[in-house]
Image (cartoon, rainbow, N blue to C red; front, side):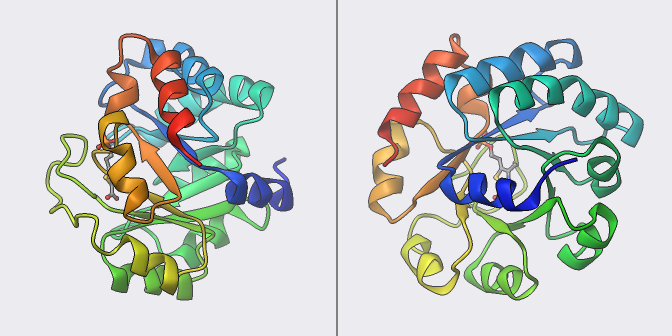
Length: 214
Ligand code: 3NM
């Protein structure tokens, strides 16, 4: 059973959010990738398995949890609050087209935090009003991981931190080469997907990016 106050503390302290995305990782490599990301130093990890059935997501989440628990990294389930509730992950994440925060929270119960994707200042403010526990904000750059989304650039990052007091994770095309301009634009927390999952040495890539974050 996750403990919400401990998870929220981890969330506030978190700077680097990794995602095990089944678009890049074969199911049989999920546990190995989970360990590499967590040992490399991600502060939070999400399971994102677009198109998988709830039973498949549940099975993958159950295989990740012993590793994330051992390494003290909160696990977030994308899109499937009912799976988050069943496996007892620390968090669940919903998109703009998914369940509302309230509906997700009603499914997961009081001990699991709820994050929401936002793609504009208006959506970020609305997610705070909806009482999300954190938001994603992006995509900053065009990205093959979410190809249908128009990049929002870096110009609203400072403003979103003025308007929204939740932890804000900037996402979309984040990599080591772009880290300094993203941080200079006001980001404090970032999500990295393909730059980690496609790296030849995942642990080393995570460590390098983490070392750049304040
Ligand atoms: N959500 P990469 S961008 C999963 O803007 C996701 O909400 C986004 O992957 C959003 O690090 C994105 O490979 C993809 O660009 C991030």
